[in-house]
Length: 444
Ligand SMILES: *[C@@H]1O[C@H](CO)[C@@H](O)[C@H](O)[C@H]1NC(C)=O
Ligand SMILES: *[C@@H]1O[C@H](CO)[C@@H](O)[C@H](O)[C@H]1NC(C)=O
Ligand SMILES: *[C@@H]1O[C@H](CO)[C@@H](O)[C@H](O)[C@H]1NC(C)=O
Ligand SMILES: *[C@@H]1O[C@H](CO)[C@@H](O)[C@H](O)[C@H]1NC(C)=O
Ligand SMILES: *[C@@H]1O[C@H](CO)[C@@H](O)[C@H](O)[C@H]1NC(C)=O
Ligand SMILES: *[C@@H]1O[C@H](CO)[C@@H](O)[C@H](O)[C@H]1NC(C)=O
Ligand SMILES: *[C@@H]1O[C@H](CO)[C@@H](O)[C@H](O)[C@H]1NC(C)=O
Ligand SMILES: *[C@@H]1O[C@H](CO)[C@@H](O)[C@H](O)[C@H]1NC(C)=O
Image 1 (tube, rainbow, N blue to C red):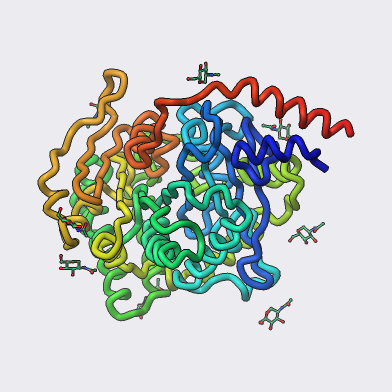
Image 2 (cartoon, helix red, strand yellow; image 1 turned 180 degrees about the vertical axis):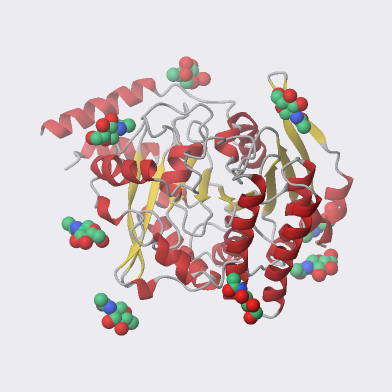
């Protein structure tokens, strides 16, 4: 039991519950029952920035792609969390600047699980319902964040989840159901799989100009992508995903097994080419993480293939209107970042989609200058931000941009969240006092 004085100090800091998990700083984690028998896992890292209260910094919600990728594993330990799987501090981690909330979503991904696989979501609407249910509980558990700016960051398949979630969250906040109205500030999508149609039209071009296939390969890939699009047109959604799997195999065969997520890395075929489903990360999550967090390690990723199977038919269905709707109907800002070495979602596909969108005040975006992002004298990418929309090009990066180019991604984080690092206060005295109290508590 924590003693009263510690509780008061924590209250002053704006923390309702804070624990030591794995890595530096205060954390909280656990399960929220989003439906009966459906348990969603989250891991919250309070910022390690030099602040007098955590609530001075925004809250970033990270949603992994997949579907079925684990935010608490891949996002946390391979991309933007405070430590890597060796327990070493990660340069350029997000937690040093902002509070980060990882959710294993949908139920069945990572440490989230269902009592019965029949409870795994079958489409994006059900998935968003669960996330809404989670957020409702989260703001009850962590009231300190009710008025803290919230920014959603997603990767890959998150391009389908992020905007849909933002629309629902913004509505609920307006009604005062969750947090204060207007707390949701932005949704930012990395290498987002938003429109299958746009993406399938760019793969062959990308591979061709990068010297990975020749004209014959272009013809073969285009023919295969046509099968995906034709299945989608006929609403044969499961068949579309089957054809997509064949596209994947064809692309691997034609390129000699290129690493799709970053064409310039993983030249050794024995390297882990999965989206975080590899044995090493699994072992680390099942053993080290479960031990540190006192949770059941056998649960980890035990249902991820059920998630992939059950969402098989929904996977390539696109809602390309969610983002223009968000821009038309809310003041939530929308940003996309795209990495130049990603062959899965080529930057040109994202640009083609932006070109096809119409939204109120798009002219503000169109008229904005596209400028170089230069950090410490080095070119890291480009940005074009106007009105409520921003596009970021990330240099020297693949699909997992925060891990490939942390310098550029810290720039994006700062630019998007506008966190204020100008008046940090010295909290070392206070931290010493808390550590002392925690020690005393453990002994008592
Ligand atoms: C994870 O656990 C294994 C087995 O106990 C241990 O050898 C390894 O050092 C641990 N890794 C970290 C980063 O703590
Ligand atoms: C799982 O749910 C289905 C559908 O509700 C039910 O038929 C089945 O008996 C359940 N299985 C278990 C092991 O509870
Ligand atoms: C998709 O459907 C078509 C037409 O029914 C069929 O010819 C094709 O084999 C199916 N694709 C796969 C990968 O099963
Ligand atoms: C841990 O999870 C596994 C897999 O879901 C389950 O079979 C086992 O009963 C759980 N153990 C405990 C102690 O809850
Ligand atoms: C569009 O711009 C006008 C003028 O700057 C502003 O009043 C309006 O709120 C903007 N609309 C949206 C949806 O951002
Ligand atoms: C957004 O507004 C524009 C007009 O400014 C309109 O053409 C477009 O259809 C709207 N899109 C959506 C999805 O509401
Ligand atoms: C990306 O960065 C590298 C290394 O700094 C640089 O050599 C290259 O020119 C950059 N490429 C682009 C397209 O900006
Ligand atoms: C924290 O910020 C205060 C005020 O800016 C500064 O005096 C102090 O040195 C900082 N502490 C650390 C550990 O950086």
